Image: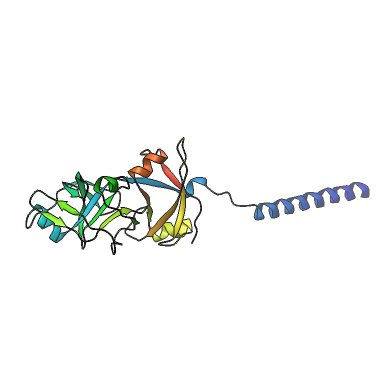
Amino acid sequence: MDKYGDVLNLLIEALQTNSASTEVQAKHAPTEVNEHAFEIPVGVSNRHIHLSQNDLYSLFGEWYQLKKAKDLSQPGQYACNETVTICGPKGAIEKVRILGPLRSKTQVEILEGDTFKLGITTQPRMSGDLKGTPGITIIGPIGSVQLTEGLIIAKRHIHMTPADAERLGVDDRQIVSIEFNGPRGGILNNVAIRANAAFALECHIDTEEANAMGVKSSTKVKLIRPFS
């Protein structure tokens, strides 16, 4: 009977050891990462213009009020019914959409290909970074405005809240890379983070970049390589 008791004790001890080992392995096992956690919706921008109050009056008449066509994805931003013509030394582009609300300074955002038609060279800039940028002529239904600066190609960027930035492990104004999937997918570098409580999570690229990557309305990008 003692022999059976010894065997039983050994079996119990073995079971307890295996159970403890399993608990340790589970505790130290790597946490599964949701691959969709770092996916970001994409918004595609065509050429457009943001007007100041004074320039709006010069182009459309005193006390003119812009008419909202539709809300955009970013809170408080909207597309207007009104369009203008922009003119450079070599040519003009008609029906450039105005976006609201009004700003303190007029800013014209164009595509890389537009520079050849207009005959003006400009560089990718963040919105509002207008110092040293070229000017352009804007023509409205009532009058025209000659800007001395304000023409940019919009630098690709990602809008997000500070909470989004913390979750994604990035900081405001940090430069990151993003990856697109699909037949024409690839990687884009030099993407700026813009973190602000007023923003909604969305990656903004222009139509040229979207066409190159085969972007559709349902496309999402993956944040893959943040760097300083």
